[in-house]
Image 1 (cartoon, rainbow, N blue to C red):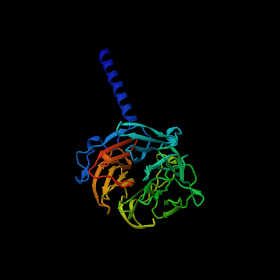
Image 2: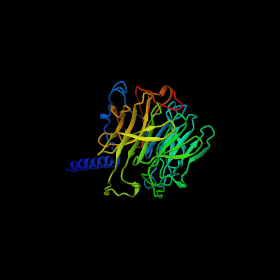
Image 3: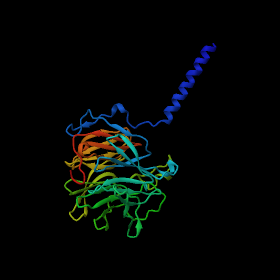
Image 4: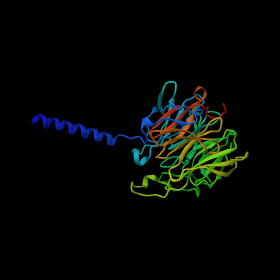
Amino acid sequence: MLENWFKSRIFFLITTIAVTFLFFIHIPVTSDTTLVPSGDESIIAPSARLEKLFDSGHFTEGPAVALNGTVYFSDITFTHESGMQAGHIWEYTPRTKQTKIFRSPSGMSNGLKFDDQGRLIAAEGADFGGRRLTRTDLQTGRSEIIAGLYEGKPFNSPNDITIDEKGRIYFSDPRYIGHEPINQPVMGVYRIDPDGSIHRIIADAGKPNGVAISPNQKTLYVVCHNNGTTNESQLSEDTSVYKGRMALLAYDLATDGAATFRKVLVDYAPQDGPDGLVVDKEGYLYVAVRDVTRPGIYIYTPEGVERAYIPTPNLPTNVAFGRGEDSKTLYITEGTSLQRIKVKKSGYHLPSE
């Protein structure tokens, strides 16, 4: 009798511990057994698999690959969740498979990009961040502010970056989180010219997020991701918000850097839409889509036709191609991690390779 009672207590304790453990661990959106790429096999093989390189972040974003192949990515440490951490930029070295802090605090950096001289451009957001664009010379370690104000007022929360072959920098300026006042009247897309002048070139994209330029320099792709709030930290779990447009937009890009709306390439309603994106040398778009029913990297033609799909275990935020021998490696930030996967197309970079 006592033996049976003892066995039942042991079983109860083991069950309780197991249930508690499952409650507190992070459950991926998609089971690993389902993470099989699909679609055009000239873009990605069905046998390709994600490889997790890093999983110690808070909210990873904005991967960018330096001229020497080192991968840099942002870690957005929402202050209301992280004990007031001030953001980090990590660097991952493919050769050694080591990851270390490159910069902390990061100014709450989000999107990162390298220019044709190998300098790191960072979009610093709100939530005690810089609300600016900075440029860092990796050789000297010196940084400079290249966009801090527009018409005498701070930006809302610079988010993502792309650069054209004339050296002009384009960046989006939405607001998703942060206690700071919203100073700009629209959430727009801006261009920084080589002479340092700043121009608002798009004011009709809703809530712009990811940006990318086609290899032929004729199209500026802009993601609209309107989640219905400008400060997620103030929302309780039972708060309902009205989400706006979730779409991938195409703008005609003139030789002088002006942008004119062309069309909606993909409308994701009623699901959540894309975040960051990148293009390959042939012009295909690789878009990180935060749809909980089908999270992953959607690969489109320049006309917005889906050709392939890479499922991810969590909602992805952004993507970047490797360089040189790794030009067919796609780096993906999602959840708390950095992942990579082999594709069959080479990424488009500055300087053009």
